[in-house]
Image (cartoon, helix red, strand yellow):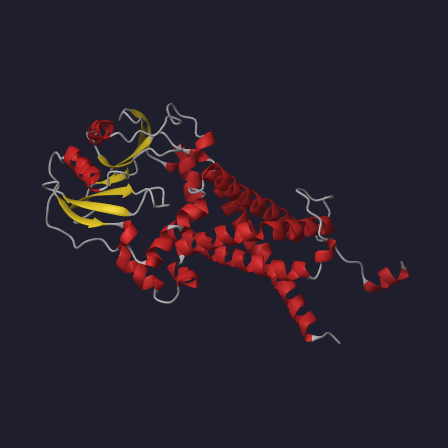
Length: 364
């Protein structure tokens, strides 16, 4: 007779294997694409992509005026410490990279023209928009459950632990042992990346860290100001906008400039204060679209505790904090998830040996 603990372990093992057989392929895609995106600065080959970040006020103003004078320009994501090109959003699906002097380097009208763009879409949306985003979030929740159940299953076989970067043999038992032992080593890293990724899709999951009421606090913290009836001026005062932001936050990076979306009536400018982990910051200044006068300010360092913790999820998830060392950690987690998931899915669907009939085994 099977006792209750053994029966529970058997059901955990069964669920772990069968759910992993179906969800594992999604986790392989998420892990591999995430590892590549974490190291984007190493493999994107474009002129001036490795230039040092320029944040001198005069240079920023000159470059901004030059870029926003391009027909159809709607906003700019400014170059960062690890990526030396500005990204210009235009009407429709057109996007361009420009040097930090504001000179256009290349443009594209389809995500398939830039590998880093379609890879980002694959990682976040699985090429399926909001439906793919939801699937990725559900896969993240499943991945968290795999980490928990995998640790439970490893515990009873812990005496046989052997750390190997690759299975000893390409047989099902060897691959499963490799999966189990490598998984327990990577479990903390996978738990962090899977949890932070899931919270960005399903905000209520964030309440596991910051408690009840988190979702309402986030909605209040990120709600834009009431719309204005101001119309966009023919020539917005980009100099005045940047100088106003610099005067208010002299140590902050200028990160994202956006013209009004819809009927909001505001030009927005996001900056990143030194204490913020989020690479593009959450400190936002809204300027009247017709006069370019400052209308509203939201200081990210004065947001609720829940909002500030939530703002840290993306940089922790993507390796945008902690320098090259933590970025390497995130890359290792992504590669490990891809390898473990890929090998396990392969053994589940293609390496399961047909069991001999009981009579034949007895005769043998």
